[in-house]
Length: 153
Image (tube, rainbow, N blue to C red; front, side):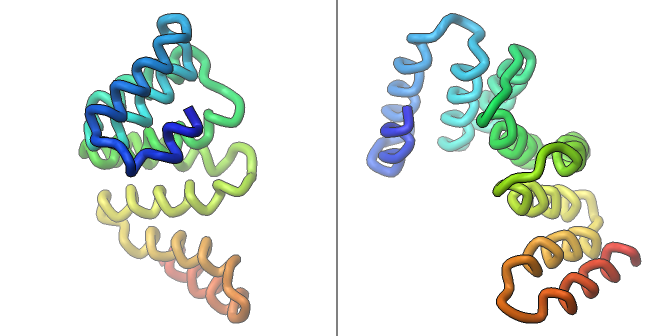
């Protein structure tokens, strides 16, 4: 599966999806990893409604481990694209309170997008700047303080 994803750009969407279906078909029906991979594939070829159904199935089947957090981010993004920004925001807000890892800023970035769709642009900008402030070589404290001010207003 990793090799297929690494070669994503070398495939036409239908061909890519067929290969993902073939690989996930090796797992039992309803397997959470298979559902996640199918959701990811549909998402990547722009079929968000089908992706959302597979993400929901993956979580319902108990998706956990290293795939759970990326699946949450991807599912939330898909929901936002489907006009369900409130649910997207709820998922990502809850995710910010779970484990901390290298995906923290991705969670924040997608939360900022959901907030923008909900008309909460100042809060979104504050979150995005807060995440960015941790990666700057200078002005980290200043930018973090400006971000905090934006989110409080």
